[in-house]
Image 1 (tube, one colour):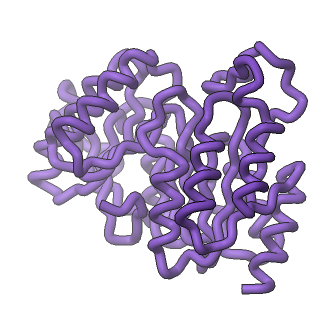
Image 2 (cartoon, one colour; image 1 turned 90 degrees about the vertical axis):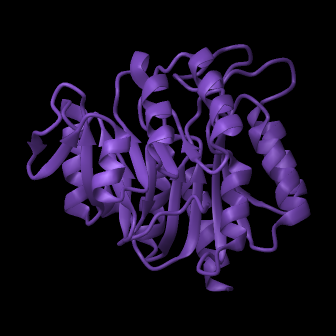
Length: 294
């Protein structure tokens, strides 16, 4: 399935009865997202401001036709929540929760690949996904995103996802879809998943990619861009000043040996024909130039 969401996407919020899930679930509904259900086995039969609560995702899907879920469950319960969503019949699972144990991430990532190959997982530890003007699943502020395309955004960094949206809006540039994939060691959705989807999406004419130090995801993305992308890509890699051997923030941002550095990632991207900004504002300016020439 496509990783994109639109105005027809129906979402069940796992954790809607908690304070964070309630806050963002209602905010997303106010944005225009079809928030059709919540889950809590102890509160089934109740509602949150008119949104019905079910015991599990399967019951919610049967009653509402939900096709996606958004997980606001505390970290120890995320593994069970993801499998409940997959078994319940949704096609797209967005996990906002941070601090999910890496062995749990690896377990449910592989369980989905094996038992539910048609289910797309986004996250954990991500801001979610927004198709401006259509749907917002997660914690991205809707007002900083301009609708109408032609740029797709994929980012490992939550905060820089928001800045990219804002930088483009300041230039009056719209976005088709913005995907925050999260920076954990085992992300459910990769740069390449998003790049492939943007390449296939007729509304997306150019792509902004935001990476950070640690791991090899950006280098792998560069190889994919070089071999398989026809659309222009602009990138920014966070962490140029990070000291080697230090883990930065709560992401999977650790540099080992000469691998995973911002410089190495930027070099790989430039070699693939990507325009690389030295800061988020410069990346925004580069994308403004790309859009002007489309």
